[in-house]
Length: 259
Image (cartoon, rainbow, N blue to C red; front, side, top):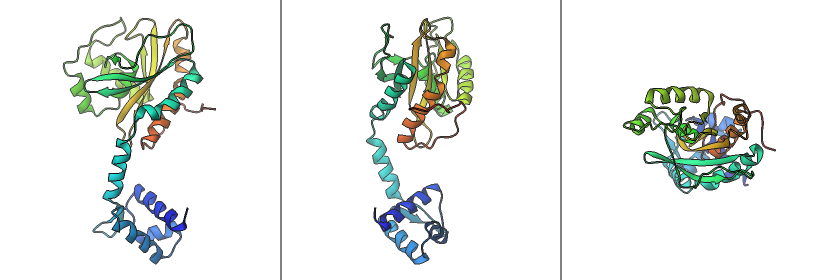
């Protein structure tokens, strides 16, 4: 990489953190004031940086346009599949990916467990908003106003004795889930099936999708399933990173990593 290009990319990275004055940019790059000025002049002429009224520089409209085009061209299934496969290999269970479409969550990808007895689920199936880990993982990171819209007049159908049958019960669950960073479905939708799930986030922290690990209770206990939480969070953080999200400190331990 040429030195000029490298310095230009460093300027963009610095301005991505916050607006800066030219003296600060020159100091960070360890270059003369005139060198920093030439870099900024070129970037400003192409719309990649903008000079504010207070003389500080920030990212310009061309950067936001490029970011929009990049994100528009991303297929979350393609991004998620490698980490879903890795996650399934580690935990030995079925991994699902789902997205919010209108007022429902739809399964768009699946990595099947390598067991003789497998779960019945299929790509294209709908996950009820109030009683699946996948849907709750998306709901817990939605803007409250958007979440209220989705739950307004929602039918809280009782699929099992553990199903949430009121918005108050569900919201309490979502609050606890947000604090720990993942959701649980302890046989809320299907008797004998439990799962854990976490959201995949965009650059601005909105939920783009959810990833879940599902298994029959006859095969693994709740405690064994919960031991997979660190790997689940690592997977969703990696996928989110591809979407531009800079992850915050996770509420749950993520010390285990892929090998």
